[in-house]
Length: 247
Image (cartoon, rainbow, N blue to C red; front, side, top):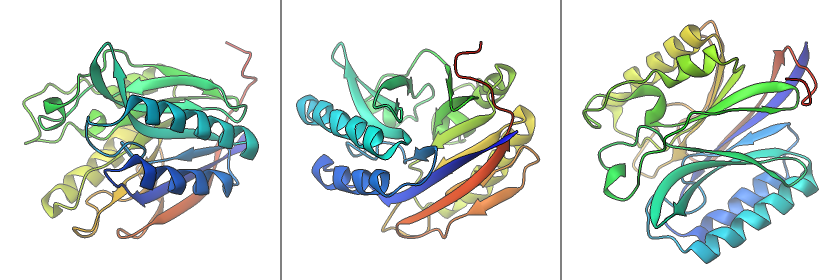
C-alpha cells in the first residue's frame, strides 16, 4: 500500500483559452501532488470554436509545466480530429509526455451540436496504479440530457482494474440535478469499487450541482469543496501500487 496524492481544481471556465491557460498553469506550478485534475473543457472553454494552433501551443506549455513541477495533469479540453470536435481529457505525465486521452463517450444532446462522441474506453497506468477517465455525462447519463443508453462506463472501468476514476465535470448550477448527480456518484463508486475524484467548473449562476471532491469505494465523500468560486482539494488515497513497467 502507498499514498497517492490527488489535487482537484474547481475553477471558472472562460470561453477564452487565453484566460483559462494562466489559471491552469498556476495550479500546476503550485501543485504538490501525484495527480492534478481539472474540469471539463477547462482549457479551451465549453464550445467548438477554439483555435487549433492556440490549443496545441497551450498543450505544449502544460506539458512543460508538468515536467517542471513533477505532476501528472488531467486537462479538460476541446480537440479536433479529422475536422470533428471532441470533448477530451488529456493526460500529461510528470515527465511532460502525453500518456493518453479520453474522449467523451456520452455527450449530452447539447454537446452533440458541436462535438462527436468518443468511441473507446481506456485505462491508464501511472505512479503504480491503474485509473480511468470519464467526462461529466459519461458517468451519470442524466435524464433530460438526451435519450441515450447508459453503458455503465464506471462499472466497466472497475472491471478492468481501475482503482481511481478521474471525473472532469462542467455541470452548471441547475439545482434539480444535484441529488441525482451526487447519489449517482456514490452508487457508481460502490458498484465499480473505485475512488471517484471529481473536479467541477465553478459558475456565476450559483453553487455547482455536483460537488468537487472525492468519493470512496464505500460511497462516502472523503472531501468535498465549497460549491462556489475557485476551490481546490488535496487528498491522500491509500492504494495497492506496483511498478509502471508491470502488466
